[in-house]
Image (cartoon, rainbow, N blue to C red; front, side, top):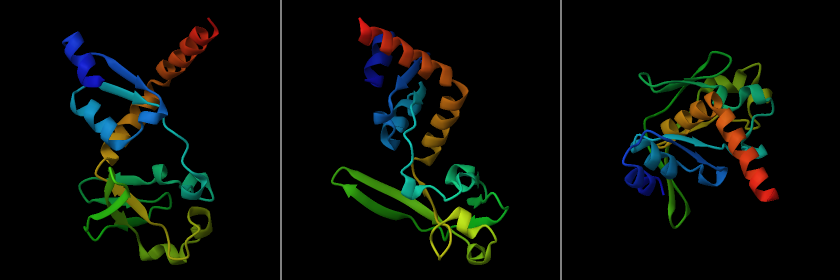
Length: 159
């Protein structure tokens, strides 16, 4: 749909608003690679993937692109061994990711707030993470567009 809209409008100077059903790495990549501002509603993370204390959810870990590391809210660095892993959720959905961890988790004073795993925190970074992060930034900066679209949709549904 994004390619078609770009072709019809003959520009990429517009914003695409999607509902959370389109919050997939491949959809985000397609639109963003076309140079189109994309804002996709962000679905709630399943409770099983959230930290016991939400201050320690993965979005609160800082990624350093140059060092290819994450820093947790306690200032501890999580590193990767550089290996890419592959997980196939369905015949058409293959996720490629790196894992980040640190042995310091096992003795961290906030371990129980950060993870339920006795082995410590594990962060996955997929090949689509940059696209998800750009969408999160767009969503937070322009949430009013999503809210306006929801209001308009509600009005239209009442007609």
